[in-house]
Amino acid sequence: MAVDLAKFRRRLKSEQSRLLKEIEQSTTEASLPRQSSDGSPFGKREEEANVTFEMGKRAALDSHLQKQLQEVEQALQKIKDGTYGLCAECGKKINPARLEALPHATLCMDCKSKRAENDNHRFSSR
Ligand SMILES: [Zn+2]
Image 1 (cartoon, rainbow, N blue to C red):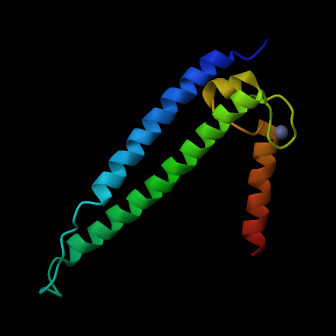
Image 2 (image 1 turned 180 degrees about the vertical axis):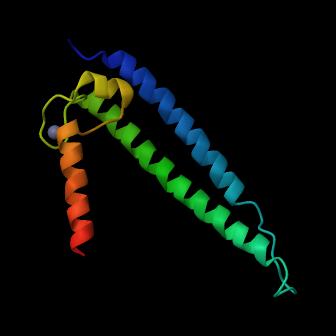
């Protein structure tokens, strides 16, 4: 019945190092000198669009990774605090099956879907 903290910590730790590595890799790639297209305002248009697209994709990926890392670190902090497995919103226990599938989950299914609903309302009322 009790949540196996050691197991989740191991999983979170490996997830953390995987994310850190991925972020490191993508930032290294991003900092490589970009090819400039000077002298040719009409050529390479397609290529440029591609580069922009790739960069946008990479930035999106980066922030996605950062967010994931943040969640993983939050979960690790919760393990330290002894609040791991409790919903950050209502304080109820998160379904162990949910933690099993998503060790860095911080919300129970109810709050998660409520929050998604709220987001939708906010989005559509604008
Ligand atoms: Zn909740």
